Image (cartoon, rainbow, N blue to C red; front, side):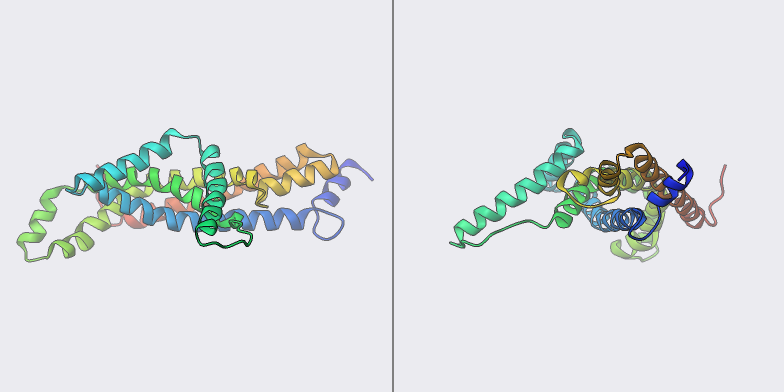
Amino acid sequence: MTPEESVLTLLSLGDAGWGDELLRGALLTIEIALVSLAIGLVLGLATAGAKISHSWLLKALASTYTNIIRGIPEFLIILLVFFGSDQLMISLGNWLNYDGLFEINKFVAGVLALSLIFGAYASEVFRGAYLAVPYGQIEAALACGMTPMGAFWRIRMPQMWRYAIPGLGNLWMVLLKDTSLVSVIALDELLRQSNIAGETTREPFMFYLAAALIYLLFTIVSDYGRHRMELRANRGVRRV
C-alpha cells in the first residue's frame, strides 16, 4: 500500500478509517460553539446592560465578572467550572442528605465555561456598540412620540447590531477555536478525536493536520457568513 493509499484509508469512513470519528467530533464542535454562542450573547447583552445602567451594584457585579473572566486563562476557567460544578453538586447532595452519585455532564460544563468566556468579551462589544449610536437620534425619536422602549428596539438596537457584527464575528472565530480546550475534560470534540486517532495509529501529524484543515474550513465559512451579515446590516448606509 502506497503512502497516499494509507492516508486515504485512515481518513475514510467505516471500520477501516477514522473519518466517522472526525466527522462526529466536528459536528460536536459546531454544536458546542453554537450553544455557547446563544447563551453567551444573552449573557453579554445582560452584562452590557448592567454596565450602562444607573445602578452602582449592577455595574460593580458586571465589572467584577468581566475582570475575573479576562484575568484567568480560558483553559483554567474550563477546569474550574468542570471540577467546581462537581464539588457544588456533591455539597448540595450532602446538604440534602442524598447519598447517590453526582456527576456534572461534560457537555454542560464545557458549554457553561465557554459561554461565560464569550459573554464577558461580548459585553464590551455590545457596550461599545450601544455608545456608538448618536444619542441625538434617540432624542429625536422620543420627541416624535416614541416610547423609550420603542426607541431602543426600533432606533438603537438595529444600529447597535450593525456596529457589533465585526466584533462579534471575531469573538465567534475565537470561540470556534476555544472549543478545542474542552478536550481537557474528555469531551469528544474534534481535537480529542484527532488525538485519539493519532495515538492509536501512530500518525499524529496526519490527524492533527486534518483537524487543522477542518478548523480552517469552519473559519472560511464563518468569515463569509459574517461578511454577508455586515452587508445586510449596512443596507442603506452611505459610506464616506
